[in-house]
Image (tube, rainbow, N blue to C red; front, side, top):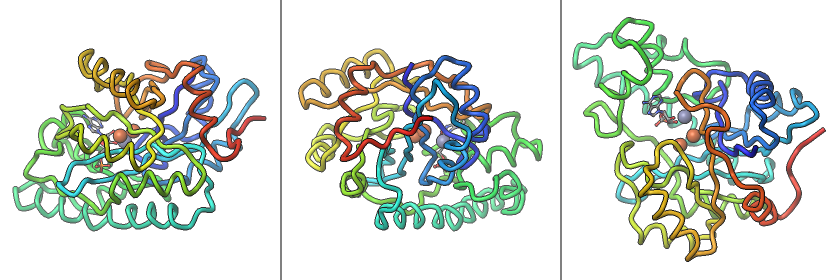
Length: 281
Ligand code: AMP
Ligand code: ZN
Ligand code: FE
Ligand code: FE
């Protein structure tokens, strides 16, 4: 099985890269994409933990935003980790996430919810990308909510009055940077409408013009209707179609391999990178 979109505790997943590799092997996954938010810090441990039977597709999920404020996640896979532009863009996003978290905390405090930056940082592994799930974990620890999911449903979702966005590149810019770094780009969960506003067909066209390689069709957050629309769009524009779990360990219900990419689609995608960068023993 091929699962191209997963997270570890180097962002907001709960498993270490070693645990992820072990669980992926046990789940029957032979090709695993490691795509922490705005970071490649987990690659090294994942490479060390590799075992026969599983190949690693190094990647990252790049947080992007359109000019009208719609959040877009672009999966970058198989890019050169020495590309300075891409690395510094991710670094800028990671750093900005701290100021953004402080603003969300201020809004919560003003509403009488007691939580501090330190409470949130206590939930974060060393060197990890800070995100709302860590705030959710801190709220669970304080007894304000029962679970990450409840935290998002009640107060941390994108339409909440506490929501603050962070610096993110334009999706077109991220796609171009990934391509310049020799990698391939796939738009993650493009129609997951319950997460917030999603991009228009027009924006989709502009991402394709920027060099988008693929679209994540099979994902837990897509309805059957949304999948049908995405398949149509992918066929019309010669885009690779992927499926993936977006696994976050215990942080979400998503299970490894619950959605997968077909081998012929994966072959097409991998062939679009400028170099063979899949890592295996
Ligand atoms: P952020 O990157 O700080 O904007 O937070 C977004 C992250 O929160 C995404 O990676 C999602 O995986 C995660 N997330 C969104 N909704 C939920 C939920 N209901 N339960 C757990 N995690 C969620
Ligand atoms: Zn996440
Ligand atoms: Fe995402
Ligand atoms: Fe993700």
